[in-house]
Amino acid sequence: MNDVAVSLSQHLRAVAAPTGDLAIVLGQLAVAGKLVARELAHAALGGRLGTTGGINVQGEVVKKLDLWANDVMVQALEASHLVCGMVSEEMDEPLHLPDRCAQAKYVVCFDPVDGSSNLDVNGVVGTIFSIRPKQGRGADHLKIVPTTPFTSRFDGVDAFTLEPTIGEFIRSHEKIQIPSRGHIYSVNEARAPVWQPGILRFVDYLRAPDRATGRPYTARYVGSMVADLHRTLLEGGIFLYPAEAGEDAKSSGKLRLQYEAAPMAFLVEQAGGKASTGSERILDIHPTSPHQRVPVVIGSRDDVVRAEEFVAGRH
Image (cartoon, rainbow, N blue to C red; front, side, top):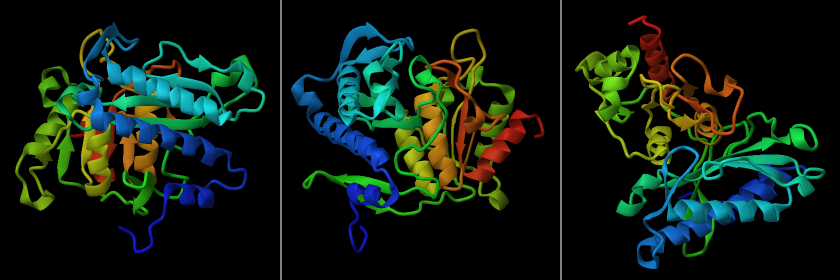
């Protein structure tokens, strides 16, 4: 804890000048985060666990909490009066608010409950989002470009932890910097038989003992991007969700560009790390569809560079 506690609202007042509009949107997202955190704490006793029986646009089973959290996010952002469009994992199509587009500045892309497969076993989940400036006024508003995600404003990454007894996010980490090389790798190794050869060789390299380079690395995989990358931000290392062989969607990767890969890439780069598909910088990719997927290789700069070298066949 800092000697002098800094709340999220205080931090936003300091960094989101001059208009304060960004602070308002972030404040509404913080409200949604508090509501989701409260619901998660009581979900098992309140009947919110389990599935709805439906399948979302991603081809994934929908959890009850996925839909509930999506509604909370939508309502919180609508209440800001500053958002004219939303892209969500739980909505087949972008939500357009045409009555807001004349004044509203932003489009928000979000995954309301990342890692929701962990919900029924009380595993770690979280919300990922990015706030992007709209372009144009009207039907063209969903032509968007990456911009500032949650805790960063182009000058580093601060982390805020919810203190539930006072209902406030308090700064717990300031100016996070990822070590240039880590000692942990995070990947679903059960998928190894369908990985590209370069990724397979890279993971074999990480597991091979070599005292000079600090190998073998330790394997840690939660199955929730927010949890695995939280550890990576603080301790270094590398998180991978590579493309897979085959003709299904995973041949282009599994994670979605606009509300998973790009927001996390921005945070990791602001903390001194690197975010790649294995062959190109994630933040250089221009979205072509709301739910576009990309491979993800992200974390400590030296580790990601080495992974890219393996993908390129230089090792």
